[in-house]
Structures are given as structure tokens and as C-alpha cells.
Length: 224
Image (cartoon, rainbow, N blue to C red; front, side, top):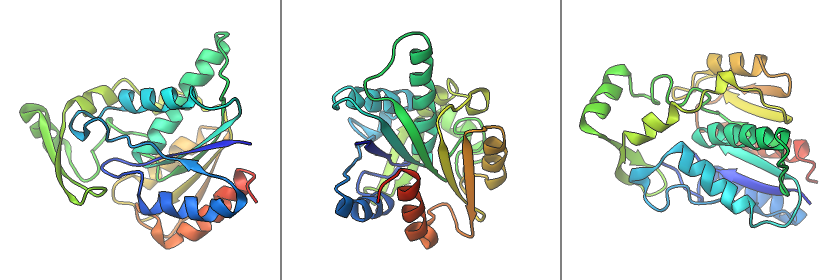
């Protein structure tokens, strides 16, 4: 049976509403979703590299079998680069016992660290660089938290548009997303033969269409 991993977004948590919807829909089929807390050990020191390392370490503990990653926003960015890294190792003769063979991406932040940071413009990013810290509302904890500029610097190591995604991927993107540019997502998908996209009348959270998204994702993943 395929393992399923849900990767939550920036300033979210494993108990996010979307993660809970997926878990509740798939549970009757006997499928459980793993969802790590990517805020740990400290949200302040969050980086993309740390998230990828946490995911890879967890995959190494699983029984052999294919893996599907469901990534939301920043989680989608991480899912893509985790899949790319694994494919590169496999091509170099180091196959994985838990190969990533499917991706479902929800409003994926493909340009994370290479464009405006959500609603933060270039001037805001420069202030973040100078002070070293950015204060944001952490939706998972429902309070203000600070994150170090190391997150933005580390993200420069990952250029989605320079990569090829080799596994079948289903993308859901809201037309009214104010955090992730819908045109950018469509442009990225257009350059990836393994990807298909479902545009919906929704914002970044995609909650108006979450039931449809979960159903279509389950079908894509082969879950009855």
C-alpha cells in the first residue's frame, strides 16, 4: 500500500483544516496520512532544507513501498524538491525503499524565496534582512511568531523552474490566490509534462473547494 504524507504550509501545523479533511476522507479506506510538525524543533529557525531533511528521515523509517506527498503552499514547494532530490539519487544508483511516485500540490509556492513572500513586498524583505527577523501570524498556534531571515536565504538554494519533476503530479490552484501567483503556477505546470492542473474559483486556502479536491486527489492516488 502507498504511504501518504501531508506537508503543511508556512506558519501552519499538522492539525490544519485541510490535513484533517484528507485524513477524515481517507480513513474509511484504511489509509492513514502521516503529517510531521515542520515547525519543530523551533519555528524561529525554520528552513526548507530542514523540512526536506525531516521528511527524508521519516521516510527512512517506513516499511518499503511507494510514497505520495500532499503538499500545501510551502509544503508543495518542499514536496517538489524532495521528489527531485530522491530522483537524482536514484539516477546516481542509490534507489530508495520508499520511492515518491505521486504528488498532490495545493496552491504550491513554486517561487518560494524568489519573489515576494506572501504579502511581503521587496521592501519588507529588505527590512527582514536588516533586522534578521520577521513577525508573522502563526495560524497553527493562533499567535504572532518570529522567523529568522535564514529561511529566506536557505530558500535561494532551491529553484523550482530549474528542475524537472518526473512523477505524476496533480495541482490545485485558486484563481483568486493573493499569496501564490496563479499565473506563475500555471506557467510552471505548463513546462512539466508529468503535471496537470485544476484551476478553481478560490483563494489561497482552497476551502471553498476542499471536498472536491480531496475526492479528486483520492482518485488520483488510487484510494477508493
